[in-house]
Image (cartoon, rainbow, N blue to C red):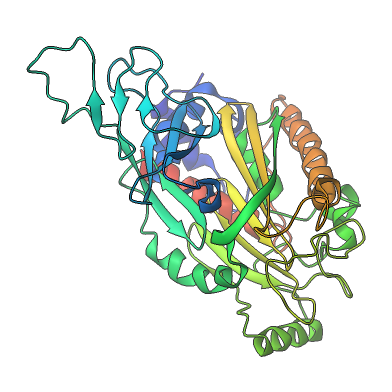
Length: 397
């Protein structure tokens, strides 16, 4: 077993451009270190504004060991809190979405207003000061309908990401969209193996037959949009539509537009649009928009829908993958789209990736594992993820 004190020594043995030493993928002590010193210092995609309707709407979720709560206040402001009572630490709201008039702990009925203020604490002394026992807040940033949260103050400046990504996301009007479907898949693999798999398409041509119908699997390894004359033609077409192409990137984020395969309108079983009421109306195929943040999420937006992927750590060798599909708020299920057609490709891809990540974990756990080299170009985003992780771990220490 490795202690937190071993992390610097282990990181010192990690070669740039290579996978990490074995303990980073399976050791409980290093996992605990990450949950307290790496993830809390990062911006996490927690959900979407459209999931929080009128005042009192809430979204409850858990990241690692940390239960979190998003609430829309009476002033329409979305706030985030640690979902932990200030009395004896019980989790207040169960996982999921819902609506409440006040936040009430189920254990001893301590009661908080929607802004986190403690307003009721039965059987406490008369001189007990309600102030000073508010719910512990987390940092929240809104980006064109997306809700990002950071659990601690040392998280990086959000402003550069907002400035770069907002013009790309704005045409899709995600703030006025709706979540048409959500899925959760449990993968018996370390969260970093899940994310490494999600950050490359080196494996896509042989492992994702449904995805490669529409998605340019041979050109999607890195930050480049595509290569050659097709890239120039696509870029010019998007500029005529007033759509930025990019890509743009920071140390922990990237955003950019890319073309789909010729004649394809969206990622679907046959490449045809699966939602009649689109997010973004255009006279020609516009390809896809990808934006991603370290440590755990990526999103794609097409003309007709958007897709979110988030890898939520559960344990040293267990990850919960949450996916959400967003459509226009006026799109009607059964009329403008069906859940089966909307979700078919990404669901198949997620299940295939689960098998790949679990197989990767089994191999990494063995005595024969040695850190191996990433492929330049094809695994460019994996190299970026690995670089980010090593830097974040050192900062966390």
